[in-house]
Image (cartoon, rainbow, N blue to C red; front, side, top):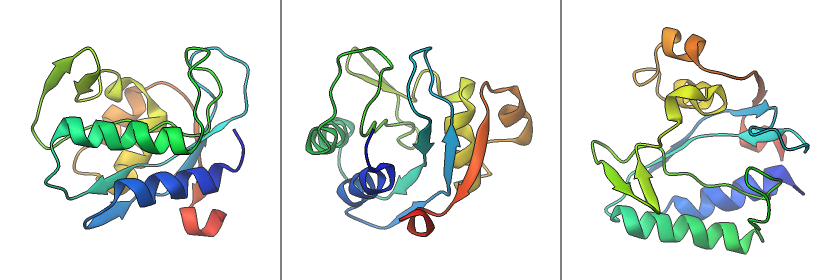
Length: 143
């Protein structure tokens, strides 16, 4: 919702306090069957010493700054920050699931992840995922 580019930039700036790399931006139809505008998606890779729970707290804090609400499951939102992978770490807690449990199903995640880290996402994995994506360009080119 709102200025998608500005919300993504806010998320990138808040989550990247060390070295980082950014995927291109892709536009996708919304997931979950709720009628809403298309999404812009990207993947940010950061180097950090922060533990998983601190990264999750930071993600929730930046969503709050972007005035994200959680009124409808998979409903419209200004910003959605997910922790996809944390190296080889595995977390299976109600509030923290890493790797992201639906990571390999969703093309809107795998396309930008492959754009950034093709060593992590094979062409076959991308082809087996669900959804349509449209390449938009770099975040800076969209602002």
